[in-house]
Length: 165
Length: 337
Image 1: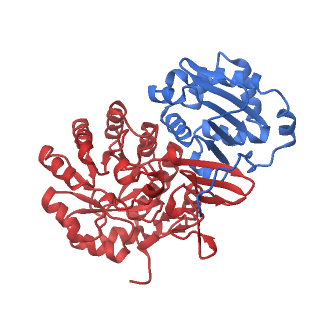
Image 2: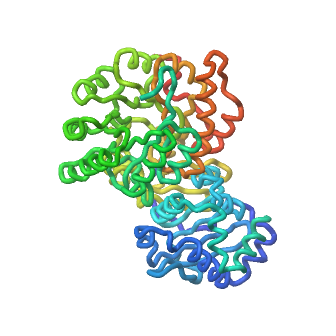
Image 3: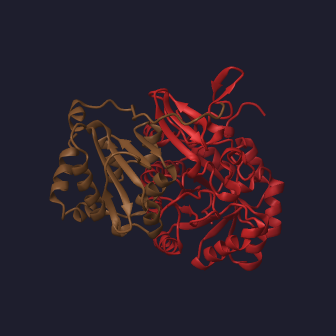
């Protein structure tokens, strides 16, 4: 194959979006992103090692929950994650809600999901790998995570709802 | 190191959580690397700093498992002290063995840390007993990890003619298996595992969903495209698809996962000391899943090798986490010579 130019990005088409996704995707993304960034800060920020925090500096990341049509946009700053608007992401990670939940509960291996085309990572692969490995290294049980999210009852309620899908 | 007639299970640990998953699920040994190019899985965020390694050793030893430290890349003249520092660190931490490939480092280890147990890495590419015995005579290596290019008969031939313990790969992703000598990644990404510790370094990799499928690019060069429903694989050149004489296909190597569960009785008979599971880059979930299956299989084989047979459930469990769409016995089984 000859070297050629990178084509323009297209949205992941690896999963059929549910009818609910079509409705949810029309909602503004900032409020969910605000809540998501707050959740990440509560759950993870103080646990991240220095090299991971450095790597996240000023990087814009989007987490796309494909089957729900939800997207969370945020960036790393010196003091934590901050919600952002859509666009100009350095890294986009996309999967179904159930698979994200399996990853968070450490029941599934990200590479396994990637091989099966159930997890897509586009953009800065090194940043994505750094995040993956850093999260793998954290010895957080699902219970620990749940406790850490206690200050955010709305987020906990939404997690409960999304896990039913 | 291993008990008579019993194959040791050597499992990967990319993180402390991975190490605990391996130990808790029945690994006899775990192998790990430090957070730099001194090991062949040098990926961002992966591996052990001194504190994590210390805790890993404490955890493993408390549960009767051993820790092997891979320092299995090749130092260059300007970076020599980084490799010797890694070796000193492994010795100070009390590692049960170090896994080395470089001759100079091997000599340094034998001279500076004579008590430290030395294993020859697969990166050393020793495929015959003369090579293995050379390392034994000069540096006192106690174990050699054989490259995945030998047939079972050839493994037996090596094992018969050396006092060095033999370790073979049992499960995990395959490549062209010229470890320690493969510079393919350098041609596109400017770095190879031999000196930089990573094949297809992540900074050179981009995945992109396009209307034609999921594309893998290495330094901008298209190396693979996975159509809808097709399994994806790692972004290595050897497992890329290329246009050759008008056809686009896996011209070098088709992604496949090595799985030699069915050969366990034969390996034990040959006198192989240990079986290694590939995958320090994988998550603790993978390590737990794979270690659990292999522990069961090895125990079943040790109980009664004659009645041993591979269970369907084991293959299903391993099939779920494997790269590629097929399991293979690799070079171990080949009808031709």
